[in-house]
Image (tube, rainbow, N blue to C red; front, side, top):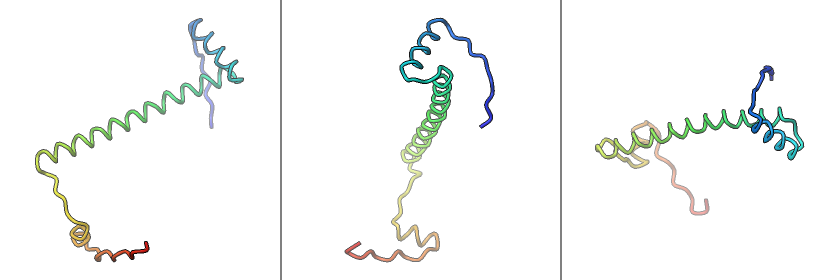
Length: 93
């Protein structure tokens, strides 16, 4: 990992809270701040992924309402894809 230096200016209140948190966790203020930044940035990615999932679901539901979604059996799907029929599973499986 290539670390980049930066200056972080905090309000007195935020600096006091950061100092208290670091002391209570037995870590440096820098470690606590770095972890908080990482959590914030990765949470942004997760939220974007959640929004993409919601959009995909909304599109699917719209297509369903418009009658554009059809269902086929597994056998029909395998045939359409040129796959052999699936073998029946044994009762013990």
